[in-house]
Image 1 (cartoon, helix red, strand yellow):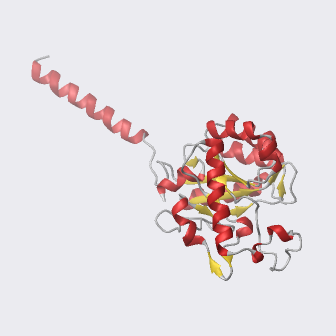
Image 2 (image 1 turned 135 degrees about the vertical axis):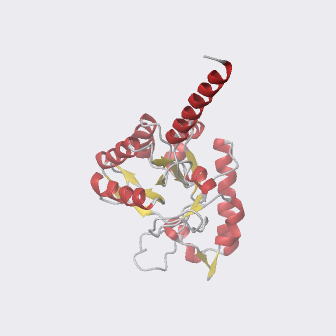
Length: 262
């Protein structure tokens, strides 16, 4: 084989390798995936540390945990929350005292001290700002996301969304919608509230977003108990297993990370 034939053959081989490498690459808008899923958990419950984190870690996934500053499981198990943050989970701001608007129908359970309808605008924004400082003292991080308590955004007839927008990468709403890149509002990211669904029903939501190529944010409270808005541990773990099986198409990450692709 002469010199020119050798060069030609090498070029063909390298060209074939390049085509193969391009074929193997993932494609998609969500960190080179077709769709994205964010698993969020509200109110710093014991079951989050006991049931959720072990399941996520075993599957190689990380979630976002929205923690009110006054939650007893946060105060009593501070070292464990600090550890999960160090291991890649996000501790999201959920205010200090979880105020909700007690003037709305069906809100009789709200205590007077946590009644958002009795807050001033500055009290609410300061509570959120101090919540960031509190969480930074736990995890040392400057970037995080926020979750509106009970989905409420109005204080004294004014929305506080714009006032806090510079403090967060994104904020999670409680209104259900599948989000699409370039079309969503980072400060009002829709979510699917999980309550009493079976594993198959949770998976059906993921299959929908998988087909559409969008973003789905799950909102969990209890997982295996501890909250009246609850899904079974088995249903949650079935969802996690499904996501792990389809990790080549579906990116699962904390909201603070996924927000980089909005």
